[in-house]
Length: 158
Image (cartoon, rainbow, N blue to C red; front, side, top):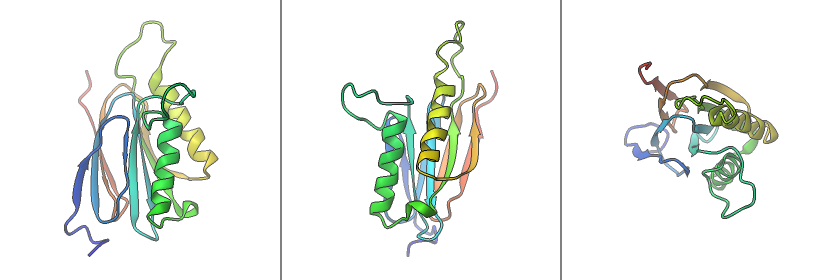
């Protein structure tokens, strides 16, 4: 019986991957400067998550979900294939921490990942209903697809 959370499948999401499957799923990931976008359709009670490492694919090499623009587009496509309506999707966004200190400050990949995620979700007209981004700590994210809930825990400060 789907939508009850009684017998969920668990999946650990590695960097550069995404997960969206039918049924009740618990998707877990660990984030530093990477971003996880959890998308959920409250009508179908289906959702998925991506975990991207870099903001934008520039056209070199293969279009991989390790890039934000590919990861978000693919996650939307996969959820639509499961019967979700893009107009109903809601986003929860996590990560983008400055977990590795850079003396130059020129390449804050976490901030660039956050900005890319916000811009891409805005282009899709998907509202961000919750977020926990930035800072200097890593995060563990656990997403339950049958009710759209996310539990997040920050690592202890250094």
